[in-house]
Length: 294
Image (cartoon, rainbow, N blue to C red; front, side):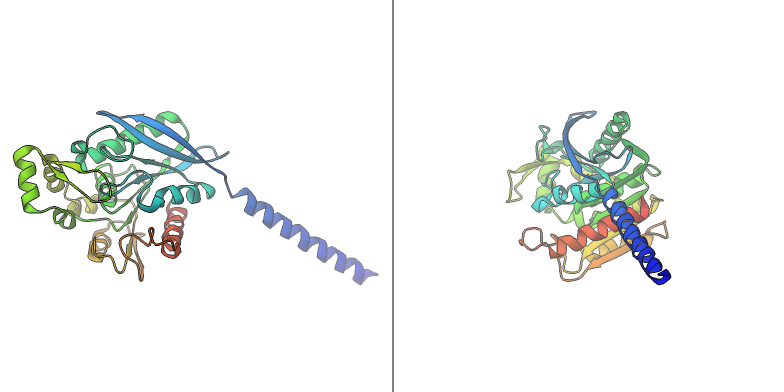
C-alpha cells in the first residue's frame, strides 16, 4: 500500500512538473503584432513597420537597417520573416525605408552615411516618445550597406545601443568599389548620377553619397563602438568580402564581440532559392545574439 502511494505521488509530481514546464514555455512565446507607422523625420517622412510582442510592456528594441536599393522588408522578405521570430521571443523591432526605397517619397539623393545616422536618430526619437519600448535595451542591425550604416550609427551614437549586429556589413573600401570612377565623376559634376540596380527602378546617387562615404570612414568609426558587435558572414560571399567582418572583429572594443561564419552560403543567405536552410541558420544566430546581449 505504501509503495502504491509513493508511486502515485511520484507520477503526480512528474505530471505537475511537466505541466509547469509546458506552461512556462507557452508563456514565453508572444504573438507578433505589426503596425505600419510614418515617422516624422527632420527632412522627410520615414515609412516604417513596428513589430511588437503582444502583451509585453516595454519590450527591448531592435532597429533594422536595409541594404542598397532594398526596402524595409529586405531582400527575399528577410526582415519581414525575422521580425515575427524576434517578437515571439520578446523583442520588438522597427524596420524602415531609407530615402528612395520602398514607400519613401524622398529621393535617393537624400541617402548617405550621414543621413542614415540622422534617420536612425529620428527613429530613436519616435521610439522614446511612443513609450512602448525599453530604451535601456536597444540594439541596431543591418545587412550589407545597412550593416555599414548600423556600424556608423553605433559609433557616432556610442552609448545608445546595447548590442550591434551585421549581416555581411561592408567597410568603406568595399563600398568605394561599388561604383566606377566614371559614375563618381558624373556625380561630382552633375550633383548625382543615375544608378540602375537592375531589379528595381533606377536611383539617383548623389555627390554627398561619395563625400560622406569617406567622411564617415567605418573602418575607423567601428573602433569607437563600446557595445558588443556580432558579425555574421557567408563563407562564399563575393559581394562583401569576409575580410570586412574579420577586420571589424579584430578592432572591436568589446570582448563579447564575435564573428559567425555560415559555411556554404553567399551574400544573400539563400533568400531567393526557395530553401530556407541558410536563412534559418542566420535567424537562429541573430536571435541567440540578442538573447545574450539584450
